[in-house]
Image 1: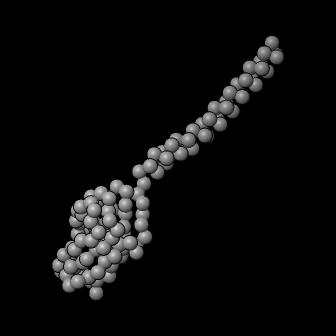
Image 2 (image 1 turned 45 degrees about the vertical axis):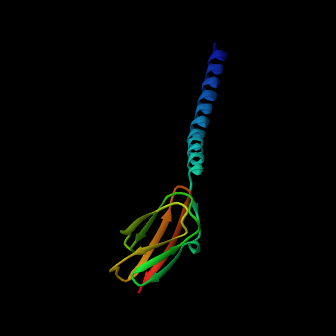
Image 3 (image 1 turned 180 degrees about the horizontal axis):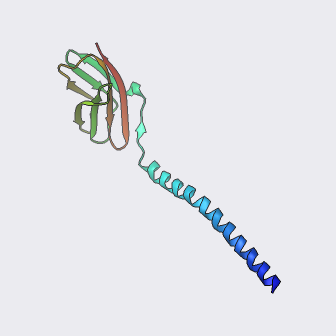
Length: 125
């Protein structure tokens, strides 16, 4: 009888140890699966030098590499508020945007779609 109790105790201890190891590994496995799904949808972030902005009076001229999909151009102020948002058709390489009465300051310009993202900072004097 004593041997059966010892065997039962050892099996129970091994089973609990196995469940603990599985429990510790399960969150890491789920996280890795979630990351692989997210990585398939990640955007290619291009250096700021790829988005060029020139100010011509109250207009800004944006020049960028040819975009593959319809994109959104957002201009935000230093507080993070969107000052201007424009949709840009695919295949374009430049666009002019009118920003009348824009106060002096630093603005973040982001052009992005499902696969590309271009960003630049612009200072209005």
